[in-house]
Image (cartoon, rainbow, N blue to C red; front, side, top):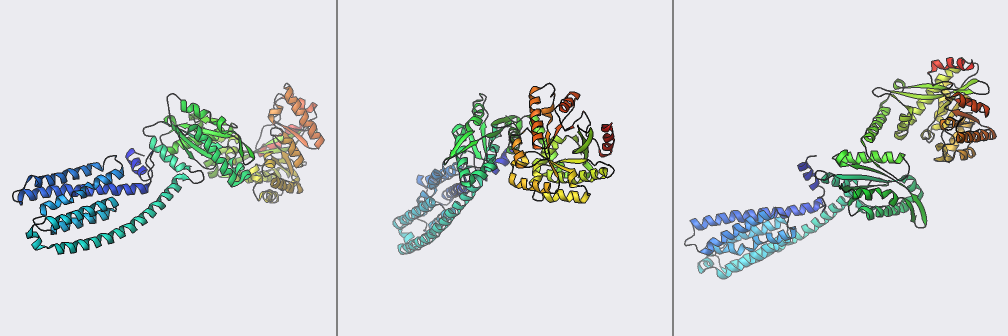
Amino acid sequence: MKSKQWRRHINMHRMNQGYEMASDKLRNDSFHLAGLVLGSVNVIGGALLTLYILILKADPGWIDYLIPFVMQIVGYGTVWLRRTDVKDEMKVRLYSLNYVIIPLHLYTFLNDGADPFWALTFLYVTLAFALQNRMLVLTSVVASFVGLILIMVLSSAETIAVVDREDHLLRLILFAIFVAYVAWGLKVGKEKETLLYDYMNRAENTAYEDPQLAMPNQLDFNLYVDYQLPETELIVAKIEMNEYEAIYNVLGHRKCEALLHVFKQRIIELLADVAHVAKGEGGQFLVAFKADESNQEEQRLATLPETLSGMYVLESFDYMLSVSIGVTKSESDGRHSDELMRNAQFALNHARTLGMNQLIYCTPELKRSSLKTIRLSDGLHRAYLDDEFHLVYQPQLNLRSGQMSGVEALVRWEHPELGSVPPGVFIEVAEKNGFIVKLGTWILRKACAEIQTLNSSLANPLRLAVNVSVIQVEQPDFVETVLAALEETGMSAELLEIELTERAFLNHDEANLMKIQKLQSHGIQVAIDDFGTGYSSFDVLKKVRVDTIKVPREFVDYVDENVDNQHILETILSMANRFGVTCLAEGIERKEENDFLVRQGGEEVQGYYYARPVALEDVQRQLFTLKS
């Protein structure tokens, strides 16, 4: 946004530093209008009075010339004053000088009749009422009464003969009634205006301030950043409480609000003297400060993870909190609040993936990666499943029989512009944007249909293993979706194996456990994928009766040489034997790895040593190759 456009925009909201409300600006504009109108009246009036004296007045004296001169000086001074930075309260007092000189106006007309005075008096008083300023009205009324008294006392006999003092007295009474009536109306109007200003201030406070924490919100923060950027380099940071939703669910609204207050106070104590701090969404806080060549502010920012993490004690409730922080610089990452907030979010997202209490700066590589992720997310939602996605199958071998026991269905995506996208990339994106539910249902149905077709030609049908995301399990209709796929394709439930990670048992474990048990009651098998990599892999075996545990590649890699992997694999194989479950080792790529598993009594394997993932039409050929 151009600077002039932005200045007009910011004046509609708040001025930098002072942050004047729009309602205050409205009142100030009336003061400026008063200065313009009053000053202009005196400038024009002084000019006309000068012409009158020069052309029509007989034998003018020095005081006759002094009066228009004073009017001109006061008028020009008032017009100039409205453009200065003088406080508005002082401006109103100075504007009142325009009314104080009313008696000077009358001097010229004392011997020429009183009617011009009455016109001038009502003009000034009406103008003061129109501007709705008490100081101007008071000055106008006082000056007008002084002028009336001057006429009644100093007018010549000829003037009094035309309009006698009784008539002036009557006009004075009528004028007082008029002033009292209008003053009452002005008082009522002022009360309404005050009430209106109060509501406007409340509305603007709601728009620009977080009501819970009584601090600036994200809209205020964006305005601040955009106002500073044209002339200042900024560093912007997003600070987030990790797992804020889980914290809210555990603590409840009241305690969570108290936690936010303590969290806010720690940020303010460290950065308030150098930074603008605001409340973001959920458990996020926003910080912006001016970049300094000495990097002192950045050094202070680097201490935030240590300062904000740790134990929080709330009403005898202890909670260990960690944070993630994303940082961006206007010098390299953008010249508008939208850009900086987006890039700070990119850095924050990356910080989350690196563990607890991470502070990450946005880099060009990170921006490119994040933008690619956004593009992939959009591409997933736009993708035609049957056109862009296809399935491949990796054989699983029974070491004891030497035959193929089953296949694992794996999905592949051919993006129309990006080409082949690795599953490790787009599956993660699909889980974040929710597309995994639609994709997972498509994989399940298509895999069941294709393997059922293959099994119809085999004497010993193959088991089909399908990976299922925890997000799918948490869907209310998950069980119905799986059973519908079996019914539609005619595949036997005993030949379907659902592969789950331990997350399925840790998140909402009771609800998920009931769904898994219901599937098992129909004969469907359950496998735990990547067994041993989580904190609670062994605990899962106590919660659910699984049929297969899958040992990941990291425990099989060079197991013939790596003593630690040998101990881990031996322990898992022994435990599987005791629990009576099948143990399948993934990622077998070398003969030595395979031989070690054979010696240890391994039951099933899967990996490139035997077969890579292949299309459906190649699965039967692989079947005969493995047999030979």
